Amino acid sequence: MTHLNAEHARRAIVEHSRRLAGSAAAAGPHAAVPTTPDWTITELVEHVGQTQHWVAEIIERRITDPTQLPTEMAVLPADPGDWREWLSGSAQRVTSACSDDALDDAAVFNAAGDERTGTRFWLASVLNETVVHGFDAANAAGRPDDIAPEIAAALISNHLAMLTSPTWEMLRSESAHAIRGTGQTLQWRATDTADGAWLVERRPGGATWRRETRNADVTVTGPAATLLLIMTRRRPLTGDDTIRIDGDIDLARHWIDNTAHVAD
Image 1 (cartoon, one colour):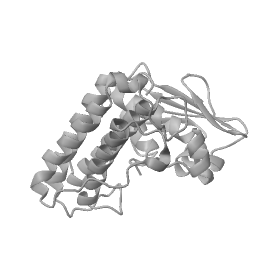
Image 2: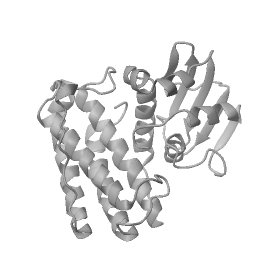
Image 3: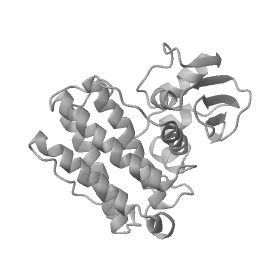
Image 4: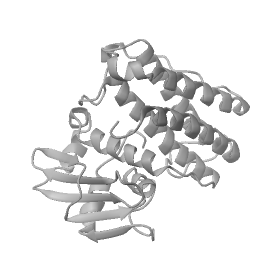
């Protein structure tokens, strides 16, 4: 996970799980989730807790073969009053599994197929799921949900890494093909963190990205958290006074319309 301290990531998973539980209690188990229209709060809580337990098992068992991934999922408590403790337990379990030793030395399957170690891939993925779905729950409850700039920046990097990974090309070929191009460039620039510039280039062989600031066909500038929520389709591209768009806005719209992360 580029430029994010692992301990910071672990603390964020625990904290955003705690916030998600609070938002779920405020919204109620049957509340609809506007940013994930097919889900209720119950289904959202179940998904996040199950994902955290599932990933923890992958790392604990040092699974390297994707055919051996866990098939049984943790059971959501029937009583919503028990959800806070359940989410706390799942968050603690997965962050403990993502120990410093496991991050660098454990042989673990990396579902993206990129250069990261398996545990670093899963730590970024769980952080993404927890933070983005934490926003979903807060939105359903009508509550604010602040995302720290450095966390948002790391998740933007993870988002772009996923979209340009070998696995995305294999499993999401329609998206991977749609974001190819002939050299068009998109610049995403965060205003509230020093580590917040991402240049995307749409090439015939596939989209690429790197940390760089330069002139591009379209530049989208704003707070890192807002950029993350736009890129993960939680907020619209336009209509926010904190966002500035320079250049070909249709190019930015096309990118967003043809990319969807697992947290969708």
